[in-house]
Length: 404
Image 1 (cartoon, rainbow, N blue to C red):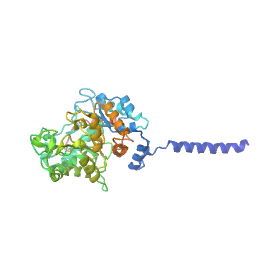
Image 2: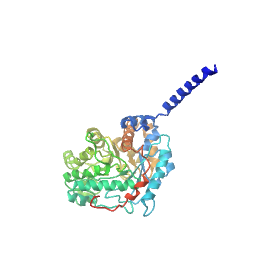
Image 3: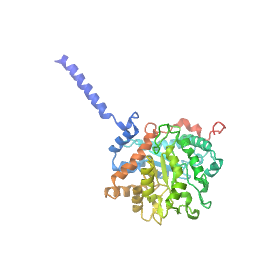
Image 4: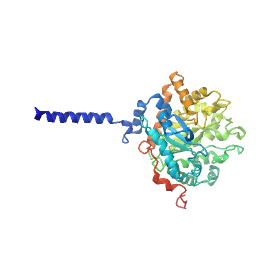
């Protein structure tokens, strides 16, 4: 009996080990699987709280590793001047981002957060970074290849600080020089703005030959996710009043302010930021027709849309006067990630209530999270969530004629 029992025991152990291995296999963690399969698998495992967390972007000053863990926060950002300390080094930025990322990775599903920053003329929020001319000057060069090389140099410096997401380029078409942000526009001529979308492959890398327009694309660890902004018409407001009303017919909007977005999608832009401005009286942050029916459905954009800083708050006048309505209107318009940036507990509570009460359907939440996860998987964030400290010497690296 003892002789016969040994192979039986071995077989049982082998079967048990095989079953254990199968139980431990998690498809979304398998980098050999297609992105869409990984997204579908992960989404199916997520609770409502985990999904809404992915839709929430908060400022680093109100964040901590514990906050990211407890609220499943999907993204952080540094607002203007929000730094680890004055004159912080690349190593200090990397340390800060790493600590935050550890909080995200300690969650049940280990979904990494994505960190965003305004790197709009070089890595301009970081001490010691290389600063390039603003867009108005770059547009005057009529040199898209130069702009592309500036994008690549900027991406390296952004990555050197552990950050994976740049809120650039601004592809506004400035139609009135009284607009206070004309320096962020490449030109009043949409054709020049279209050409200057070469910043996107500079930041993200060149899309492959068989690329499908509208899909997000980030080539590798030396690249960052880009953000075409501000959708749409922000450079055409009446009398150049910032964040005001762009009064123009649909044909004018489509032929002047929209073309650069088509170029951006063809180049694989990962995200699109919505404008504070209105189009013919309708706030862009509440414009379902343009954000969902046109950008997502007609143009087939598959990355994620993101609000501007407290953008949904400004749907109402005064801003924030009916935050519950603003959350409802913004999310139903098709905004996927909300740059809260500070009052995240209120946002999460209200959005959760709207879903539980049937005001916002789960399908809208799933669409938003699918898009966010698609970008994160596409850029390899699950495989390489932590900053690469060896890139720190790229910050402020001496520019030579070979570099730019």
